[in-house]
Amino acid sequence: MEKTHEKYTKMLDEKGMKISHQRIKILEYLANNLCHPTADKVLSDMKKVLPTLSKSTVYKTLNALVDANLLKELTIEDNEIRYEYNLVDHGHFKCEKCGNIYDFDLDFSMLQSDKLNGFKINEKNVFFKGVCKDCLSADKA
Amino acid sequence: MEKTHEKYTKMLDEKGMKISHQRIKILEYLANNLCHPTADKVLSDMKKVLPTLSKSTVYKTLNALVDANLLKELTIEDNEIRYEYNLVDHGHFKCEKCGNIYDFDLDFSMLQSDKLNGFKINEKNVFFKGVCKDCLSADKA
DNA sequence: GTTCCTGCAAAAGCTTTGCAGAAGA
DNA sequence: TCTTCTGCAAAGCTTTTGCAGGAAC
Image (cartoon, rainbow over all chains, first blue to last red; front, side, top):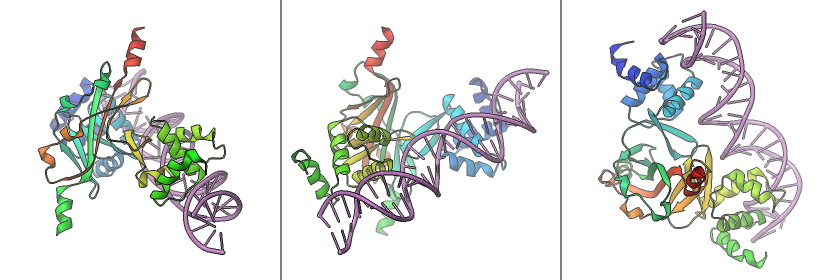
């Protein structure tokens, strides 16, 4: 395996996952492109690098990486599961015009409610929808 | 139309929607059962009252009610659109064990980030996942 | 050599659509 | 009467599954 892939090889290995060319490339892609692609976008982008890559491999790989906690699933809109490289918690903003997704920092410790006393909270998600700065200024122009 | 339905008849009418038995019953169901049903649950529950109700009517009606701003779509988990009667903003908690969804109050004004300066925010969503009190105590028992 | 991954095709779910008949205004 | 809603069936999408061949260990 090439040297630049050592990092991802190690990550997969530490999770007990078998190393494959496809898995390394998909993980590398998510790590280097901090966008929030759907499975379909992963497939079309990766086809340029791995022409024989199949839809089912993409789905199986993404699910395996989510199970291994290397990726996170985003549930911003129905009918489109999006994936992101697992970094520190942050909020997501989706522009209703251009469809872009923006990350933003957020103090998640503020998010609490007396109603949830005694509940075990495993995951906190925050997402906004609206129109981003760029689309707003494009409107004025 | 019966007297108890006047409220929902009026709501539909104010939105310029045609009144139908199905629409009134579905709207009434969502308003009285503050659960967060999927389209499928709406269908199976409503079949008891409206035996001829069809899947497509449920989908069309729910979409129409969302468009009219009488219902809100919940995007908590992929592959299941849930609906709720449109009340004041609140957070949602989904128990990973029993699948129940709990509402909780939240001060949404706290949720902001410098990164979103200049953005137009139309909608704020907060949802948690974890294990609810009941399931936790059931585990101990 | 064994295990498990990949990729093709088919299946499975959920949601939408087209259309004829029925209900509402 | 005219509009539009309902309900059936079929189509559309995304995601999952089964299986044979192939890659990784």
